[in-house]
Length: 442
Image (cartoon, rainbow, N blue to C red; front, side, top):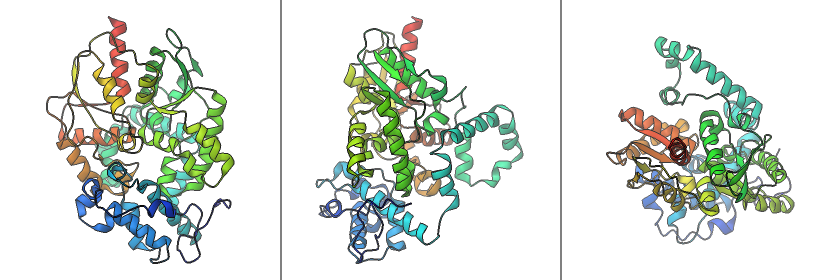
């Protein structure tokens, strides 16, 4: 149900639902064109409508009643990767990501009102991701599929051929599902090693805890090793990023309220997050409640405590590992870490502090890899083109590609498999955890 408290666009506009794109966001665009050279879709197609300034113009025209909300607006809005690279170079500070997401919300609710619902998308957005018990059930099924022999049978008999090619390939690079989600495996509180520097409530996420629960466990160990008391709220839910990207802002608000309440009760100094997309969503909770003063104030307080794991370690005082980790790595800047959260220095400073590790910079490391949430499934051609460019940029002689986002990890695992290169795909915190384990062994 649409939130009745929020303001609705003028009747002359086809943006008739709450949370419409705001004039103060699109009116500051001066159409200078700096965004063109960093926009993946404009670089690929050369179509002004599929550039950041083109999308802003279309959104403005629709908001002011000059264009109808039809495919001429909808297609450019949904082909945007929401990578925010345009925001990094924009001299006017145009919030392109927020405008695109608000416009998608108008499309979502317009289609809902017309009865044009996507039942599959709606099932996952409202029936799966907001419900931790269902996510855990899916995780158990996937673990059974991997370990019972069903996966081998499916591959041997060609049963997977009923799936689209992109989904077949993604299934092939799903990591081995571990013993259990970190939210269940980890205790509610982990005492810090040595002097206590701070406390942090760990946001385990949904995709991260389904596919990369070992990264969550590594995050907890690294925090404890660096004097941070870790708390694991057991009743947290998905961050709501996928819902915002799809336009279902009401569902995202419900999930945000749940998380705000849960992490308020944790009483922790910080909220630690190791997924770039989730971290950006958590930090942008105030935007969801821009017309709800009571919840906006709580969202501001919540978001002020959110820290990416690399950001948090630098802030509390990172203790470099004592043992050497002799390996050469390169680093991929996840879009929602470098462009949305403006975090570039911290992950590199952590990697450079590991004895024996060599960091070889990747050209255009902040260019999108094509994952972009579920963009690699909804727009596979564009996603594959970006992935090929990303793999072209991986330096020779490295042993691992390091990053800070699970979607990127899945996408780049696919690129490594296609290129048949002997490369590990690792999260930044996994590198640190490995170095600390060597320290303990020594």
